[in-house]
Length: 181
Image 1: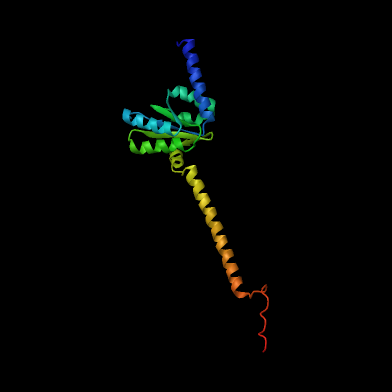
Image 2: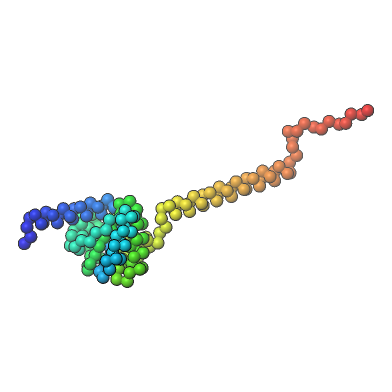
């Protein structure tokens, strides 16, 4: 039977993970079994650069954290060697990075994930990874707004040009008749 000290340490680890999961924008569970050290180092560097926290933890502890965080549906994916990537800021970063590495490394696979308190299966995480970044979406929206405004301006200019050609100028003073000599 484990000592009280070990049990308290495990409780603290579970509570910490649960708090991170509750406050996170998104997270992804992956099977990392069989990954080479060089690949793992590259993965961790990419995750760190994106501000994503990557943790390998026992499935029982992760399952308890899922219960506390309100993500009990994720427990069904906790089998084998599982790691979790959690992002506090960017909801797309963990999915995009994990998908990129899952495509490169045969033994590395996405199991599930969560976004805004909802659990996603593997297909959901892959769909999330295919979503363009916030900056790209904003750029597309601004481009479509701008193109609509330009079209409106061209229509207005065409109306002004058409009206300008058809109507004689009324503001000009009438021309004087030449004086007879």
